[in-house]
Length: 195
Image (cartoon, rainbow, N blue to C red):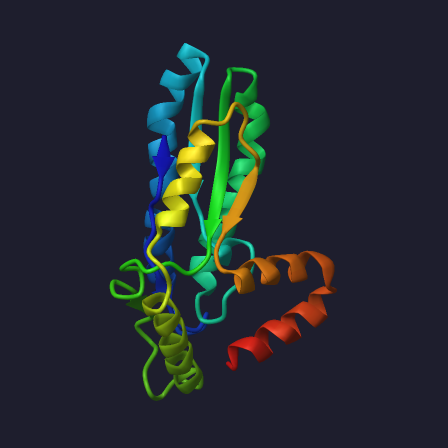
């Protein structure tokens, strides 16, 4: 089983209402939870099954002006870590794939925080982030690499906890986060994004 619930909510943390954040989590996190809860009893009874969640690189690296999106995707990574040992004794496995930028409709269908207006102190930076992320998605390859990775995982005997798929720069970013101090990594990330 593969779950790929996802929408994007862009805006400064302060400009995003609690109701917007709750609605976003209801789709990105609880939508995935609902699908798992529907399938898991069947897999548990048959003592076999694979669950693959489609997360995001934003669930490993926090993305500016996508704080709630990143939080929801980080939650999926934590869910997988916690769920794996609970269900392993029933022959059920779970993993999360964290894709980088791929040409999907995520930025086309993106929601923006209601308070992201010209009076907001974050407005100009939010607009720059929107343009930057949108351009990256439009210039990205189709998500064929994600589909191929899903296919390979479904045919593997055992699933890893998580895998990432993306451009060489995105994979380098994940390595840098793992190896560098948080302060140095944050500085380099901000410089590379120009936000």
